[in-house]
Amino acid sequence: MKLNQLSVFLENKPGQLKMACRLLADAQISILTLSLADTKQFGILRLIVREWERALAIMEKAGFVIKVTEVAAVEVADRPGGLAQILQAIEDAGLNVEYMYAFTFGRDGKAVLIFRFDNVDAAILKLREKGVNFVGSVELYARVEN
Image (cartoon, rainbow, N blue to C red; front, side, top):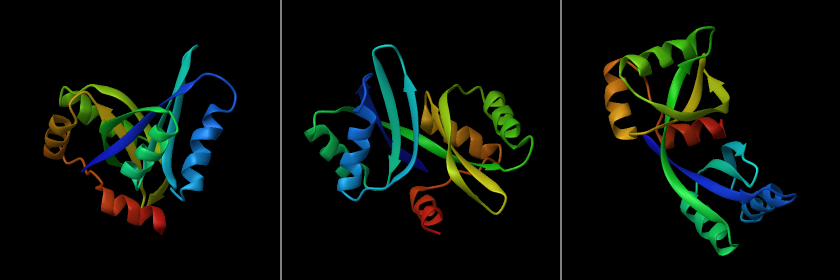
């Protein structure tokens, strides 16, 4: 139920984001979802890609500094209050969310959000007990293709 996310550290200057995306495009690696955050000195491009190991090797060879992080894909009811319900389960389980971002697709009235917890294994166990549904990589990739 865990996914490997690439966190790419980018210098905060023009062209860095394009260069990272161009490397993946040239290698025919599709970005399934991403998040970009910045500080004054650098940005962090968080990516979910199917071929994360190949993407990692290509980008490191080009000189990018990258960290691989385990995240969880959580299915959320795509309706008012759906996210609040999941966040309540997270709070009830005593979990900490470091960050989250969404996929651009949904299906059957469900959205998929990426969550980074301080302890992803514990989060999956505790939230499953509360009825939270996680999406594995195989199912996630199949949803993207449809």
